[in-house]
Image 1: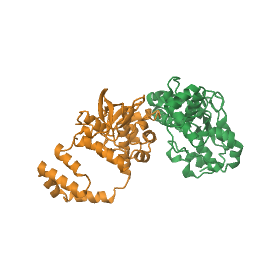
Image 2 (image 1 turned 135 degrees about the vertical axis):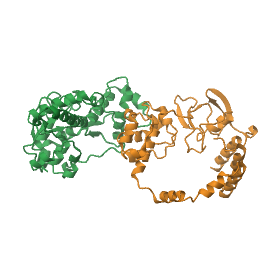
Image 3 (image 1 turned 180 degrees about the vertical axis):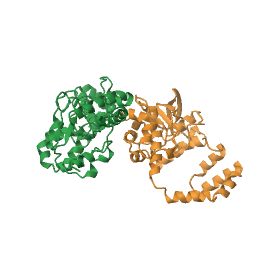
Length: 272
Length: 265
């Protein structure tokens, strides 16, 4: 963000949002986590909270709307959280992609690109939490285009594929990993068939599932299938591609922690 | 201040040396497990229970707010909230409803600290319920040490050992956080594991190594032999002498030991 002239300040105190937005309308307890974070933002005299995680975005944005829609709910939550200042509402929850699109603008990003990702075929994968439900979605839930626009601004070639807004299996990865495995298999093969060399994600849980279950799938496939199907597809967070294109030094890009190293591909294109 | 200290001293005398009711100027009524008792004002919950006739064989330790043995739950007149505190550190109020929580039957997993990686992963391995935290902050409200308990549980969730160790350093393991938690987290055990793991990442201080070497070389063995061979009377006499020399406890405290043997632990 510094390369774009922005500084994001981490909240000095924050707690887990709960990861999954609670659909139980009478269980206000599940909204304490999200609302407490909004109180922390309010305490700092700020009005906007930027998240990098799609699940945090979804949970915080929906909780914010949930308490904002009914003063009685907010009053009950405030009465319970008597150890905090009352939440007055009005903290806006923003996903980083929104900030890049609406405030920084993709034109400005394109102008600051130092290492255009020329010819790199990237499949943008949205998953669910950025797009659904519609009232908090940052883009069209059926036909999103924000990641494509960002990738184009970075010089890459966005690869369209039908599964880009489908569910990766999410937290089923814990209790029923076979569901996530099946979902990921479909998503990754569709992206490959469309010609993608990389998949760009915008959610940490999608990233985990696409990496983790791709490993297991590859291992399973190798026993039966021809080596042709074996090529692994690196999964990068959109911020890693953004930083790469903006000329951020390689040691800050976090490639070493990835299961599928994108560096052979990137060095082939003279990007690292 | 001196006047208050005198009053506390006065009140304490009534309990520690036997009550002289005629010397008590102010009285309050407290309800211990629902039954009313008239007790001297200005004494602690623990002293009030002893005055009422209870004798602590468990759930009392240092009587100085450090050992965490005397967790207590109470309610004050006209308030619907259940409050928590240490019985030895909290003064009675008129109309107080009291009960002691001498033990928290929380699960405590067994682990070999040397076998665990010194990072955040063992926290969720042994205490997966940490992930159930809904950030209600009830634990923080329950803590008699005024620790930011919920914040350290959140730090545990993130695997931030240093933050858990720092935020939980003054924990006295009374267990009140665990008794109040709707997610059934055993905060104090989580924090203890985190401090142990974090301790492994720190260099061992030289003075600790020196002392271990002294112990292993037998430097203190003669002294221990001497103490172990003494009779109870000799030990008590030695204790009184030491205390007088240090000027730490006054003569009244010393005499209490004589009367009660090992005190009222």
